[in-house]
Length: 114
Image (cartoon, rainbow, N blue to C red):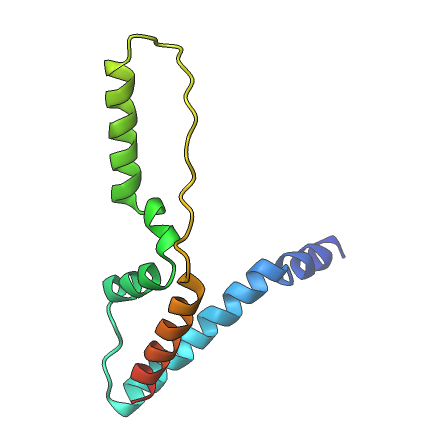
C-alpha cells in the first residue's frame, strides 16, 4: 500500500507530469521530423533558440557563471577589506521582451511547419 501511495505521489507531481508531457511532445515532434525526412536541430541550436526566447537565462550559462566567479575572486583579491559586504544587482529582462518572445515563437512555429 505504501509503495502504491509513494508511486502515485511521485508520478503525479505537477512538475514531473508537465516535464514528462513536454518530453513526450518533443519525442513525437522529433519522430514526425524523421518521418517526413527533415533533420532534427542539434542541441546547441536548441540552446541558442532558448536563449533568444528567454534572454534572462544567459546569466545561468556555464561560461557566465565562471566569468562571474573569476570577477568576484579578482575583486576579493584586489579589495583591502576582506570582510567587506557589497550589494548585488539583479538583471532585469529588457522591456518588450514578452512581445519579442511571442514573435520568436511564431517564427519558430512557422519554420517547424514548413
